[in-house]
Structures are given as structure tokens and as C-alpha cells.
Image (cartoon, rainbow, N blue to C red; front, side, top):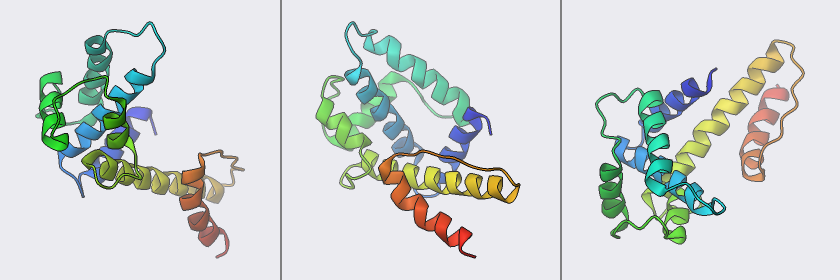
Length: 156
């Protein structure tokens, strides 16, 4: 499963529950937070973000969607009620945090985590069924979700 196929798969799964604007804004907010966390000297914001927007356009399959920075700024104002400022770390953290269900980005982030957890568990099960010995390390929050699903499979 090439990386771009996983990205397209995740987006298609998220589209079952969220609008394209909500999904793309979440990915945008996540990258803005990544830029904020980058050590100095930083790449200029517009240059940094445009590379990600170009990749999102390429791998999303959304040929008719507006991936421009101006559109992302409008979505930011729509979803947060705030004027866009790429240095507001807390705002972008809130929009990227799956524990924050009060934000659009937080809800999409939670959905994204669920899609990835389900995908990872299905891949592990598929590999084990094919006789492959699997060793996997994932973050603590993912393990909490994945472990019961894997136990259910292996206890059958």
C-alpha cells in the first residue's frame, strides 16, 4: 500500500462523516502546527505550507477542490471565528488534537485516528493470516484502541 494510496483511502473514509472542507482544514491545521514547532531558522510559512498543499492536491484525488492558501485561511476563519495568524500555536493545537471534540479539526482528527487504527489492525491480521511474524510499535493512544481488536481476532 503506497503512502499516497493510504492518504487517499483515509480521505475517502473521512468523507463518510465530514465535508471536504472540514477534512482539508484539519490537514492544513496539522501542518501549520508542525511549522510552528519547527526549530529556527524556519522555512518561510508560505513556502512550507504550499509544499504540503501541493502534495494534498496530488494525492487526494480531489481534482475539483481549491487547495489554495487563501481558501485555507477562509476555512480557518469559518471554523475558528479568528483571523488567520500562523503563529497561534494553541489554536492549531486545538484543531489538531483528537481529544478536542469542540473543534472541527479535533473531530476530524479523532476520525482520522479511528480510520488509521482500523487500517493498521486489518493489515496486522492480514499479515498474520499469511504466516508473517509481526512486530509493531505504536503510540499509547493507538494501542488502547488496537489491542482489544487484535485480542478479539487472536482469541477466535
